[in-house]
Length: 92
Image (tube, rainbow, N blue to C red):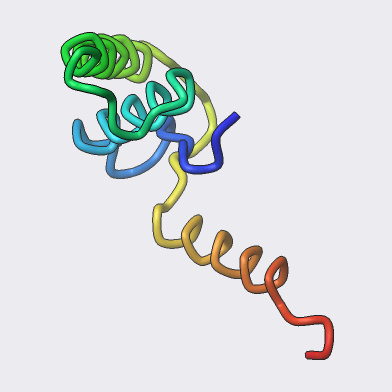
C-alpha cells in the first residue's frame, strides 16, 4: 500500500508509540490523499490518526508469534542493501 509504512510487529525493542503514530499518520495521508488537510478537515484528520494509532497499538499488543524477535539494526542494514541494489546506476 504505502512504502513508508513499516512492519512494527515482532521487533526487539517493541515499536514505540511514536512509530505507531507515524504509521497511522502515513495511512491517513494515503487514504485521504492529503499530507496537509485544510482547516475544515484538520479535526477529522487528527481524530482519524489518533483512532488508527490506538487500534494499531491494540493490535500489536495482542499479536502472538513463535518466531524470534527481529533486530532493528539487522533489518535496517538489509533495507539499506536492498536500496543500494535497487538504486544502483546501470553503469556501475
